[in-house]
Image (cartoon, rainbow, N blue to C red; front, side):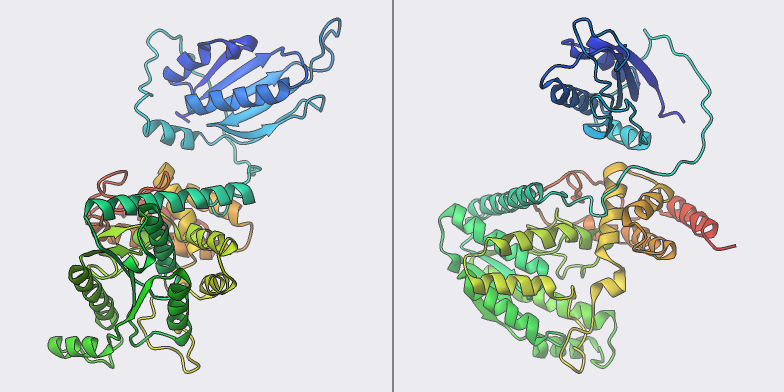
Length: 484
């Protein structure tokens, strides 16, 4: 286990202006232990907790703090056995002061190694150190750490609301600057009645408020075709009315049929050409309308769709500024719900909640006989909850498939059978590698978190990258999970 490099400091070393652990970490230590005799006084436990957590964050390390406790002399001081285990700023385990004095958890050294790879501060040089090699028998353990099934979404209500507000502000500020720089007279958005276009519209409304411009400078366009349902069409119009933006309907069925005749496509054949043709006609209408009104087309695609390539190349994949490009689908839901909770009217709240309740769909295939959506995205590409989980750990830490499967199994707590987790993990890797060519030519858009797929920023991947190594590990993993 090459990532396990242990170093030690003693007690008050941690309180020093330049703790020895700083040099230890720069020399390559990933785990720092501290044997301490820290007496207990009012308020000191919280200070100690923050100090250990912050040191582990600065050093991108695990910090194990073991404190003296009951049994020490109480002549002038009392010791509380306040033990702490922190990893990269997160408190993983602690013993309550005056408790049993034991803290136990697992450390993720691979995660620490990945974090250090992303930092230019860590180029280990241990020339002045004495290194001692040692043997440590390894054995499987049962995870006791809790892993969130939605790593992009903060768990607490307050933290989640703060995150949603911050992201909306980032979106709005980025779009406002682009509209201002381009001297755009309008912001043109294709509004479908679905989640992503709803969020893009909400961000555009905030951008116009920042610029002091009327909401009517936003041109929201619905373009019904073969798969559009009454529910989504109605929600699109109500949403635009409640937000006070300009609303226009451009039926595209006749245009699509004309295009099909031009290329010899049989309308009865419901293949990829049938679906993508509609998406590209919609983009054509939006782009030309933006040209005619001196505006910009605002993209609606989100981070999850970009990761899976769930977008039509040069269709909904293309825009002039993609406000949702850094936001995963699981977080999109919470941002729209956050806006619903603070909606200015009951009607706006109602339509936002109904949009949240609508199945995710591109609506490119005809509706069912009862008028409901027949084409549901998650039945085709898999649950976004799983894909966002996989996306987070692939992009943020570069974990291999076996580790991601292990973490997913722990995080989902039995809600998905192992074979389902593996099926969609294989699907994720296959699509992620195959669809890179779409991400290689993304429109501009704001980064909102630590995970992004912009080819100009954090993610630089060749479009013809080979997935053989990952696929081989997945095949081995699937074989090992087969019942004997």
